Amino acid sequence: MKNTPLVSLRGRAVNRPRATLWGKLELSMPGQMKDRVALKMVTDAEARGDLQPGGTIVESSSGTMAEGLARVGTLKGYRVIIITDPRIDVSTAAKLRALGAEVLVVDVYHPTGGWQQSRLERLRDVLRDVPGAYWPRQYDSPSNPGAYNSAMAQELTEALGGNIAALVASVGSGGSLSGTAAALKQRLPHVRVVAVDAVGSVQFHQPNRPRLQSGHGNSIIAGNINYRVIDEAHWLSDGEVFQGCRELARREGIFAGGSSGAVYIVGSWLAEQFGPDAHVVGIFPDKGDRYGETIYSDDYLAKHHIAGPECAAAAAPQAIRYGVDVAERWSHAPLPHGGSVPYHAPDITLSGDLTRELGL
Image 1 (spheres, rainbow, N blue to C red):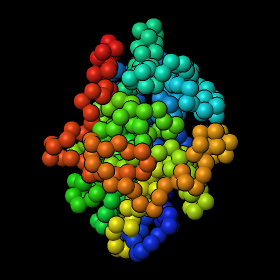
Image 2 (image 1 turned 90 degrees about the vertical axis):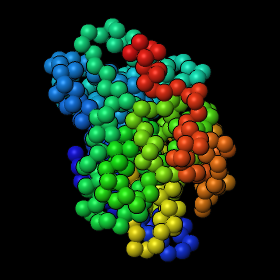
Image 3 (image 1 turned 90 degrees about the horizontal axis):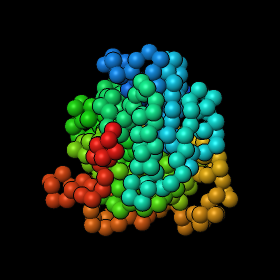
Image 4 (image 1 turned 120 degrees about the vertical axis):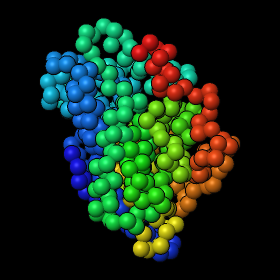
């Protein structure tokens, strides 16, 4: 599971000479980007003896991690149980069941921890009731960023050399961006690492609010997020991301999910910040197959009032003050590495703390 396609992209409307924009198509793997992570987590658990033959894998996921674990786990002969929430679409649920996984859907949104906490509470009950069950802990497992620690950085530098000016990726469980960025900065200390988040996500010192985006953004802070290797955060609204996916399909011929659409918007702008000899790389994690009734449905966008051109992303983001201003539309801010502002609000739940509170 390596050497996924790296393709040159035209980008969105270009106003001046720019760096070459590249899309790293992790979405081309059978289970998309989480195939790498799922295989690493399962094989590491086997090596430690935490996952025994005939055991059960239980994980909380609303998308690609579920598919990766279902594929890897069932092929290796394990029972796989996925705890998810109502945001899961019909096609993904059907795919998980076809791969042999059992799908359990929670139905109550936790007032502070969101769907993530509701799913973890259900996961706790499953772990208690199923002998030999193993939880990979995607939000806190070193195997998550470990799946990207060297392979991705090596693939990018072998293909593009040393003039990679920026790396941009979405943040969900935090592993792919953090792992890739840490390894890439060891090789290329100058590289600018840009995290893409959702408006209403708490990961970069924003208030928790309901959002339609899934796959990136979070209502808790994943332990895998390595803030020290991230230089800048961007936040995008539901309408901007969904229409960005449609732009990506029309302009580049790539039918992708929300995380990829968000990366496309930010990557296109980032390319304009560098000269024509530089490279900007965006990691595209997810296909568009499971979003036919949401992102790619005109009726869905109209129902949620995000269908008009006024809802699409502008040509450039708005600069805001990290930890002070609330992002409503596409915004960006440098991360405060000097310690003047914490990386996230102090009252936001950490995945590790939530695990302990739930007795996990």
